[in-house]
Image 1 (cartoon, rainbow, N blue to C red):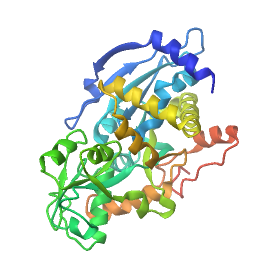
Image 2: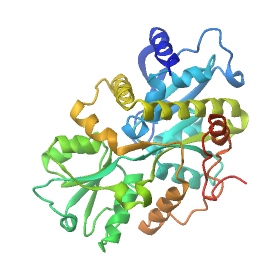
Image 3: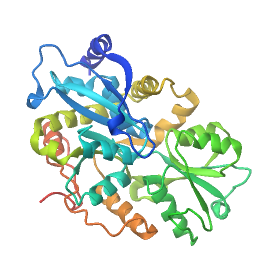
Length: 367
């Protein structure tokens, strides 16, 4: 993809560097940071829009967005429409930003997407693409836990009550026959809800015995002496499960379909480039993390984390439905009606144009 590095150099000259707090999009104690690229001079605006506002997390499981931004791929597709970005660290705050109109499109995990959809009775968002699979591990202190059965009675961190990894761990614990109160986290295993940024400190201090977390947090714990006891991919058919979706405001999708399709072209192009150029993509993702947070990941962390994540446009919709059932079983969610949560029409237009197989919504698409 020879045009992308040249475009990146152009954008690097034009980019607005200061980070601005996006107060309107913050909630649940979380912060979002906004950054803006500049539209390509002389290029036409998509759908007549001045800007499209894109959200994502500073996780490697969101590397499609990290790489697409860093390499200027989204801005290339948006042309004269400016790509604006907001980096979040929690799903509820990104959903809040989408609901308030502070962002239009976002990369997000399945649980917050499901929760956001259910709470708004399906009126606020649609899942329009997959992005990544895998990249979640149970990492433990090998001095305290040497086998899966040793997890009983221990303190295990998850990122947030009801988040994707929290639901996965509660479901796995239930399958071991252990009783855990989902709300309090107390029971045969103690679940400690902890921000991913804080979890390595808790592990280092001995406050937790392990954690069920996404990358790069899992590999940060390994760098602290932790041992990977279980890779969540091993629990799923074909070792595939959705960890990151692309969502869009329903109103934005209806009013600006060409802009949505442009971002999806960028997403598909980013994943294609990531899979064809893994080393360059890993470096690009790390560079964007450094730009967002002021600190790049150490080589020992990113080199361990990167291979466990699969980047795919397939939303793996059947696994999202399974994750919803897991949340219901844990008592965190009443059985939801997810029919209509997907609209893969624009993605499939992009995939057809690429000569790629169309994505399936597992019967949960708009009719």
